[in-house]
Length: 153
Image: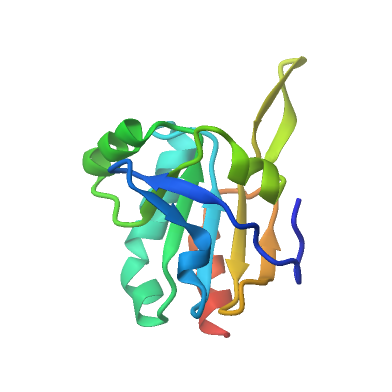
């Protein structure tokens, strides 16, 4: 997994409308990027709702929030509409961003091993370098914790 001080990789994602964009397009201002396993599942829904609930505070700090999963853009669009999500949801269907950030990991559930996205958040500085990493995120209170770090910039 990428660490504090690392430069973010040059990856291209698709937004919920299927339009390509690069993370480097946000260079010049801080950015929060969080990875989550799957849209419209309980933990991922709560995380997205928590970031959305704090969207005004993130906007006041001038920091966009982007949630990344391997879901297709159409699924992300339905997910956002269903819950009124205002954070940017991005599709990394091919997995390039997950691989580059190091969030595509082996997981285990009831003794079964499989590959999946580790829930993690990255606070990225205006220069494109990682300021802080939250690996193995527990959802409850996480969006507020990240906001505290953003407001301390």
